[in-house]
Image (cartoon, rainbow, N blue to C red; front, top):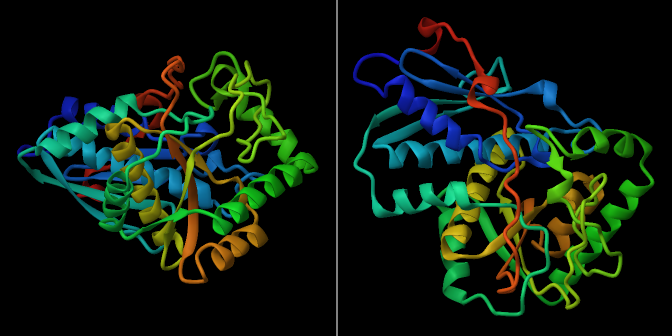
Length: 329
């Protein structure tokens, strides 16, 4: 980048952390371009999941998580990101342009940045230890600063979410196009994208909250008790592309905050990929006051739980495009 802005090694260090963001099926649907005075985020249309995510909702959410990861990484490296979202109306896949100004890292910047490398999607059952209300309040506060709402689902709303999760799984079981697509994005033993077999668990139909079933899962959860996860719904006031991008940023903030606290977490987007189930969640869980963007399982792992293998990521070189500096300034 131009003199007075981060050098190339700093930019690539930040991007290396940004690509650790979670994404649907670990598809990593982002492309980055570096200009003379800015960094640009694009949705990689080639990674569209036609059967799983026909309206690209999950892809935009995924890119939003990477955008927030990038902001956190730069903040810890001494740069504050000024984000221009959807800067080019003629190109809806141009999701953000990021300009940088010098910044003194705070202790929160450093803590959240450290959480990026520790955060994992954990699909196992969680223990019965309660989550203090203050922790859930902190998660909601961090999401609110990014324009999203976090709603804890209990009693009847939790039952509704459980029903929609099971219904979505059952429908996908009968969807041939979905089943043809899934092996392209899961069940592999060696890959830099998709959900590896070693990180997927066999689904037990008796579970209240069955995780998405991936191809060729390597093992079973092993838990014999119910899943005591809390269910949080992350929502926004609108449901356009900008709202989904902002929701992705909020999801990142929630996940990094949870990791920093010591909580395990797993995103559940499967029921929200089906329009009628998404409407049901909006009506029966959110009282038609907001648009659901993601469901999050969060809780404490049992003390006996082993560490999970690290989910692979593509290298920065694989997601970085050449870009004309003049066009990016």
